[in-house]
Image 1 (cartoon, rainbow, N blue to C red):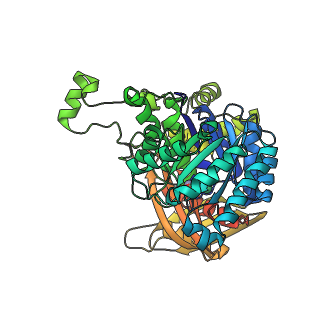
Image 2 (cartoon, helix red, strand yellow):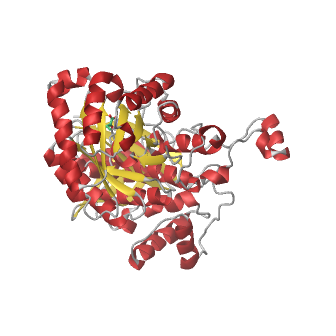
Image 3 (cartoon, rainbow, N blue to C red):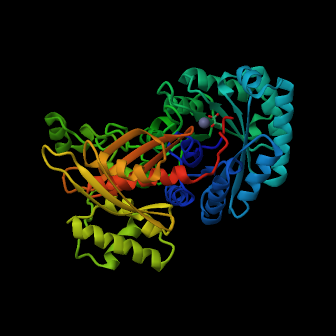
Length: 513
Ligand code: KIV
Ligand code: ZN
């Protein structure tokens, strides 16, 4: 048994399945680059057969990333597997991850298949995948709630067909640590060829135990791959959180005794990028990446930390990427300083034209905000004027009037494709008036499910406001994010960004379908 533990990141696949977390191809590519800097072993880039957009994202990531293995999910059928293999063609190292449900409940109610049919489909799919790719992972969906005898039969066969990784999903987050660990240990002990595959854990967080279950799967069960997502992003209560599981393994190496290849100083930049891209805000008291994770408020703690850091700190903030001394840029900073900061933050720009566009946005922001922090730079590189990603709706200008005792009024000009639209409206407040003005022209009919504002950098009213808007329409849920020192402008940008996502017609097939 090796002492190396593999980190399989599924932020771009299982994380993205969270309603509203869908990302564009370019957003996914940017996050994949950050995951490569984080040095995760495997990046599950998407589910190639689910939509043309997912196919394009997996293909782009496979072509761009050299260090991590790139994986695509595929249901256990030839069409999905062939599509995954096609999307992965340019990868330096590729993996096909195929799955089929094995619990009695899922087989009978969802798949309407007999166990023998599921067994046969799993066998044939792994055989087919192995003909296309040397690295094949197999997941029995709802594995933890499956009959162990049936699971042993299926898993022994798929290993014999060449599956190189066997993943045991706790799809619905039902497991408890000791039982999950023992479940995997028993499977490994009972399956004669179990040593021919790497065993993997995949835990959902419905009972808040995804990290504990994953670690038990490793320690009791002998698994050597953990599937996880940045910020624990994922459907319902999310997946096992990458930052928590990695820092547990690192901080308690004395107990776990396992090596992980992750560069932990890239954790906080990855967390920020995922949260800024998806609009899923990180709670302040979230372990490792929450704003308060290293803040000592009580006098006794502060005094202790000043005297000897380890009195109250088990990890160092800088080891997980909280910059000890943030270099602040401003109006007078030149292009070289800006370019250097981009490099330090690990942001790669593909061309000089992109750097110039980002620098122009930076100068524009610096005119309105005296100090530019790393978070501001991360927010501005996602801007369409920098990425060159042409979106259907784009804010051109906004003016609003609000005065005590008067009903606020907003005028908004925005592009819709090649047309320029002008709209105005009253509202309960300037944000309400601006969004109503946009809606009066777009007529999306979408329901606003969430509106939230956060300061990108804390501690000052000078900070940029980052607004998340969640819209629902026709069964789809999308998040839009916008940043600006003026929160009314940030709100209009966020609303238009959500409308852009609704506007993209790509239909997706649910992975659990
Ligand atoms: O939770 C789950 O069962 C999954 C599988 C598709 C691996 O995400
Ligand atoms: Zn999952």
